[in-house]
Length: 553
Ligand SMILES: Cc1cc2nc3c(=O)[nH]c(=O)nc-3n(C[C@H](O)[C@H](O)[C@H](O)COP(=O)(O)O)c2cc1C
Image 1 (cartoon, rainbow, N blue to C red):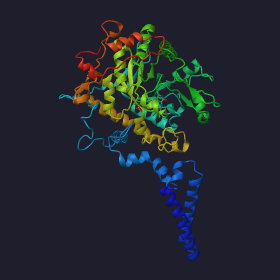
Image 2: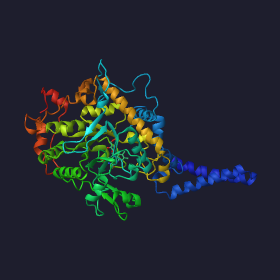
Image 3: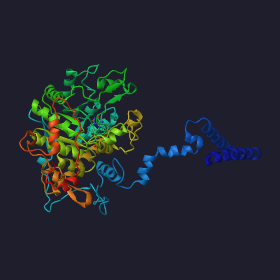
Image 4: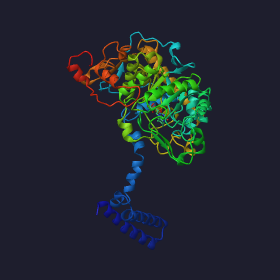
C-alpha cells in the first residue's frame, strides 16, 4: 500500500467511527456534518481505489483530485504568481501589459529602465540618430496595387490579421471590424469567408480564400465564379488574399466537424450541414506556381481590378523561387504577398506543426524581399508580414527586414481582452473571443472593445512613427535591413543581412554571379511545380567567417 492509501483507510475508519459515536452520544448538528463529510470522503476514496481508470487515483485516493484541480489552473497560476515580466511565451507580461495599456489609452511608459537583458544573444536593437526627426503625414500609409490593379488600396502600416468567424465569436468579429473602421486599417476575414459581422460596422475588409473556397464554392466544393463576384464586388472588400499556408500549421488543412456547422455558418461558407467540412492541405486552384498566378490574374479580373495577393509561410526557399519563375513566365504578379512567420498563432494546430515547421517572420521577409529584388519584381509587389507584433519595435523590425505593412492577430485579440489563457481550441474562451458559445460571446461588449482595438492600433502606430523619427528618418520606407542590429555569439553585433547580403537588382536573372545557395535554389526551381527537394546544407556564419571569404558562396 502507498502512504496515501494507508492515510485513506485511517481517515475513513477512524473518521466514520468517531463521527458516528459523536452523533450517537451528542446528536449535535456539527457531528452530523462531520459524519456526512467522512462518508463522502470514504465513498470517493472507495471509488478511486476499486473503480477508477486512473492509476493516480488508485494509488492516491481522493488527494489525486487536488492535482487535477491545480493543474486546471496551471496557466493562470503561472501567469499571475510565478512568471517574471519577460519570460512567458508566446507573449510575456511586458508585451501583454503594453497592449492592454495602449488599448485602454492608459500610461504606457516604464520606470527605472529596461527589464530586458540587452546583452543576450539574438537581442535586437536599433541605432538612433543625434538628429531625430518626425515622419511626414504623407508617408503614413502605403499604396497596395501592382501594374494590373485598377483599384489600388491605401493601407495602414498596422492591420488586423486573418481570423475567421468560426474561430472567433460574432461579437469578436464585430469589434475587430469596428476597430478597423475607427482606426482606418483593414480587417482580414480569415478563411471562413465574409460574414454579416464583418460588414456591420463598415471597416475595410480583406477577403481571404483558403483551400475550402468558403464563400465562393458550389455545394460539392468547386469554384463558383458568380458567388465569387458577389462578395468580391462588395464595397467593403478592398483586397483579396489567397491562402496557401499559415505559420502555425504550414502544410496542414482543416476540418470543421458537422456538429459545429450551424445554419448560419453553412450559409456563410457555402457548405452542406450533413457532413464534416474538409479544407484540403493544398489549395485546389493553386496546385502549382503557374496555376497560382493564373488564379491571381483571374481573381483580379473577376473582382474588377482589386488588389489580389497570396499568403504563405516560407519553407524551402527554392519553392518560393518557383513562384518567382512563374511570375516571370506568365507576366502575372500578385499585388501583395503576405508572409506569416512560424511563430504565428492559430485557433488549433498539431503541436509538431506549430513548434517545428516553417521559417520565422524576419528571416522569411528578408529572404522574399531579396528574391523579389533578385528577380526585378520588388517594385510591383508589396510585402505584408505577420508574426508576434506587440510593440512598435516589432512592427519596425518587420518593415526594416523588407515588409511594407504588418498584420497582427493575437495582440488584436488582446486589445479585445484576450488574457492568453490558450484555450481557443476548447470553445471555453474565458473572454468570449475564441468561442462559439453564445453565452460567452455575449459577454463581449462590442462598442468598447472595438474602441480598444482602434486605440491599440493608433497608439502603436504613433510609437512606430516616433521610433522611425528617432532614427533620423522621415519615412518608414527609408528603413533598411542593416539598420536592425542583432547581438550574435561572442558579444558581436551584426546587422540583419550582414552575413547573407541582399541580392542585387535582377541578380537572379543572370546579370551577375549568384552566391551558392541562391544558385542551387534558382536552378532547382520550376514554375510547373512547387516541390523542390531540400538538398542544401546550411553553413553557419562561423564557418563563413573562418573561411575568410567576404561573401557566402
Ligand atoms: C484564433 C486564430 C485564428 C486564425 N485564423 C486564421 C485564418 O483563418 N487564416 C489565416 O491565414 N490565418 C489565421 N490565423 C493566423 C493569423 O492570421 C496570423 O497570421 C498569425 O497568428 C501571426 O500573427 P500574430 O503573431 O500577430 O498572431 C489565425 C490566428 C489565430 C490566433
